[in-house]
Length: 214
Image (tube, rainbow, N blue to C red; front, side, top):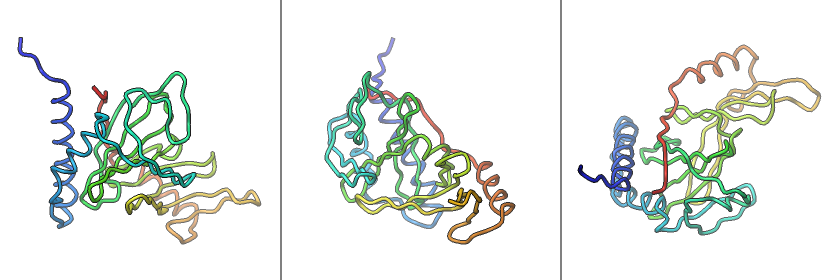
């Protein structure tokens, strides 16, 4: 029976997924496929295999430090785990729709996600907790919540170590116990918010694939 190298198969799958995202987003938007595609793919692969470091961007605590991707995760953006967690699934997506794909990794125990992004020869990592990323559409909209009456959709923009969030629509529970609704920066009616919220939930989500570092 022919032996199949699982590491090679995984690398080939990630390469194919990255190419599909490049062609499906950048090309569709009239942009060229990134000239550094092979360099980007190799950087992602080396970071995932733990043979190349990357920069963990902890914007919550404003800590940016070099790290190596372990098979078992005992330390992660200021959190300690015993027993350790692991990444159990990945998705190749393009959250900011710039034609350059990112890799999203899902942690075990429903703890959260780590996003890997390549830019100018460097791979950066960004953490998301489970409630901050309850659903991700193929168009890059992300559903998150801060409570039963405080939730909505947002998108992300990147620049090197920095990540900014931009609200698509959000429902806030105000200090006086009233609820207010926004689409972007504009306050709207409950019905307007609900219509957009429901529309976004109907959009196709990103595709998850089982992941193991080896």
